[in-house]
Length: 183
Image 1 (tube, rainbow, N blue to C red):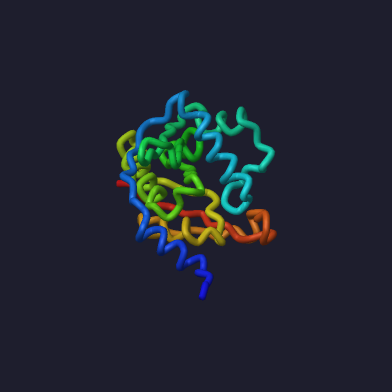
Image 2 (cartoon, rainbow, N blue to C red):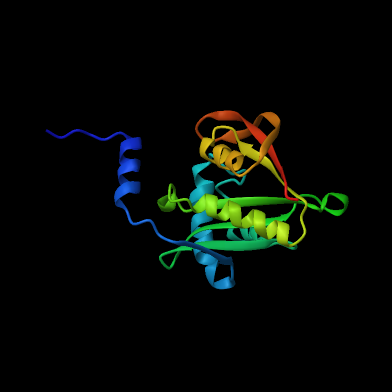
């Protein structure tokens, strides 16, 4: 008799039986841009975690991801790029000692710890280059895996922005401002 597995059962089964790749993180380079764009498109098109519209052009995306005073990295597993993150000053001038960051994981690599590895790496890199804190301006409240991860890495919710994010499926949902001191 065939019994359909729930999503959680399928995910647990995949995590238990699937090879757990070693994730390495390195600075992004021009040769990575096609894969970063592919990940960017898949994450943004979902409309559930990033403020970018699905119509965001490659040029607009890369102006943000690789802009001035931005550090961009990729996560590799088994020789393929499975995620990317970037960080930069959250504000200019007198607010430039606080970093801001953005993270994207390929949909087929979710649940493998890529986000956590990138988060830990990002905090260390931001600290290394002299940032005193990191702030996320919009963490979508319904993105429970991201909220849980950032809390595990020591971030606190310091503010709730009512209905600040237009979710593709749920309509207007709250967003959090999350903060962590780095020193």
